[in-house]
Image (cartoon, rainbow over all chains, first blue to last red; front, side, top):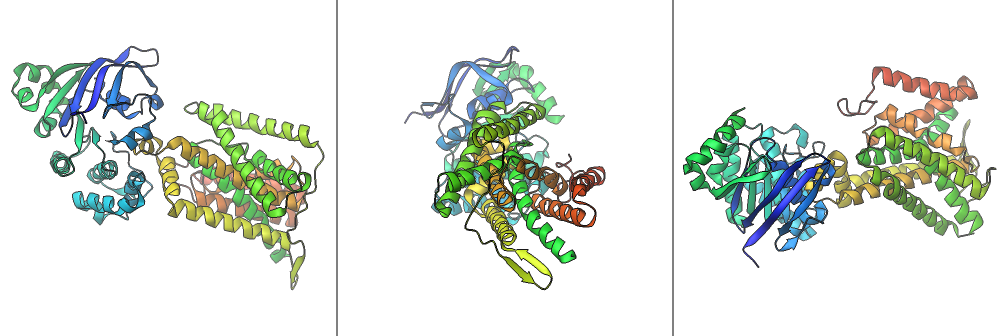
Length: 251
Length: 288
């Protein structure tokens, strides 16, 4: 078993006949790390996530060149559900819960790939991490608050015990105190389950507090890579990206 | 007479509800407004004719063959027509379903000839008489079977794992994909279910009359039924089917047999004017 869980090599992606949304992006994620992917709106973060999860095609995009390997296996040719089956889960941007179903039903969709004997165990572990979900387990998900929906989307992704969890724009539209609370919980989950996480954030200041290393996407290419400490200390990095990230995050 | 009309309305309405339920399952899963639902009912009736009268299979086996053929037809339609067009405009897909219904009709008339066929089954044919009320056993069987099917599919969606995943897919396609659901498989299954329900409806409609491509018009009563009940609502389809059956029988008996379509589509118009999301539909997502 190699130390790399996700390896992206010279990945280029386009939508229709427009120019490239991603231009030869390469980076890898070590096992058990928490990696941040930062960048302004339109920098290509969502495109990168879609390429990794397999939701690119239904959003009108296509891979032009390059490769993505998950746990040593090339995944670009696999449909989305097969990638989830390999242990590559995601909590999508905008939370996307099943709004007409109950909290528990939402979680059971995520647990559906587990053997029946492990489903209850999965459910109770999610309720341990997010007690709010247990309190509301019979409520219709569409009626939850934004923070609770975010917890639900995370719980739905985590219940199958993925090897890698992609967290897309967790902070979007949530109060800062709630964002900190949820990121704190995610860190505890990562440590207790050994889950590797790729955290996509527009709000760089929040992300730098919780990740080990960061990659910054800038107009479709990696513009900066380094540890969170280096990034926080780097004047060049701050000037180039964080100022922008902060404005976007506060907006 | 009132009780008699109420009985016929209920019996026929139950069949319409069944066909409408099939329509609603497909619409919820794949957002396809399937104008071929009536043609799928006709196919069910002809599958039954083929299995019973032409192949001479024993009745239970014939029914199984008819159900399997209907399910397979739904799967093939999804694979060859619906899935390749996914992401296209609703209008394009509607046109495809209209074309499909015309093609099905033509193919059936080429194979079986334009004249209708009698479907003879061992289903009970006598009449129960309670006071003034005459209840043909065939109507009772049709209504009972329809309700058993509706309850069974209700339980399937509510209590099984596959049912859960189908509801998740219908609720939010992309989220279901992100959560690891094989969305294509679920959609295919929805088409199989929609086609089977239409087929069972067609079997009974063919029993109550004769089997011909004219049954398509009756099968298409599923459309006003689902719009009246609420496009996004599964119980709405059943309620809408019952209402259409009642309106049809009451207008036929109390006004004129020629007035049924006016009454049904007049009522549909009222719904569209005053409650466009249907009786049991969701005001925000179910507007027609």
